Length: 282
Image (tube, rainbow, N blue to C red; front, side, top):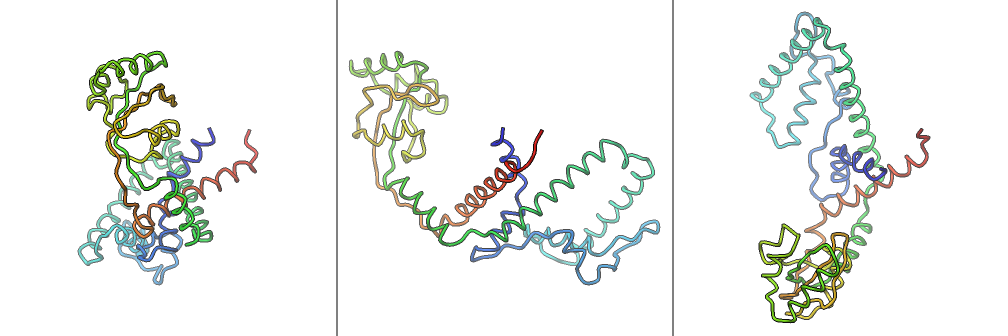
């Protein structure tokens, strides 16, 4: 249950990740704006239009323009003209919604409450990430750990996945009698992703699999198969190693953005768990 809550919180983090990126990456992406910063911009009392006596403030356009720039849209007179029309149309519709009473309906108010909560959560996490940036030392440490666990070899393997140990032992007996691994996989494996390819798992590193599977794979000699079933959370496997090759591990610079995101997510997961542990939830 707690894990699901943490995952749900992470789904609200575009601002937080953008904040961490801008704090430590060499190339800084455009910062996501906040309503507060837009409201404090110079000329906050300026208006771009008046609709039935109600001002449409210029800061709304500036706020939207900042959002669009962060997505790669060019700031131009044409773009701003389109935004002005959009904001005027929104104001017209909002006024009609208020007249009709729908703006005060329970459904709309509930949606507004959820949206408000998401904005506040995102803003808080964004600010928290800015105040707790991932250091270069932490990035290097995580990179070294991942490199150590991954190793320097890739393995091309096949497997047959079945429900019981007896089934797996029976398949191993068939292999010893001369049966073809690929044919047995096509007929018996319950792994839909590899069954039609004769159990072929393509190239990968042992760390990509469940630990018992990866450990058994790393111990195999090229062309050999496991003579005892290997049990994982998915069932029982018979594994054959087809080939091994040296792998060039990417440099820190190449994986830095992805690694940074992962560390930010891990840190926020920890924050959510810490705050939840302190909270009184009934």
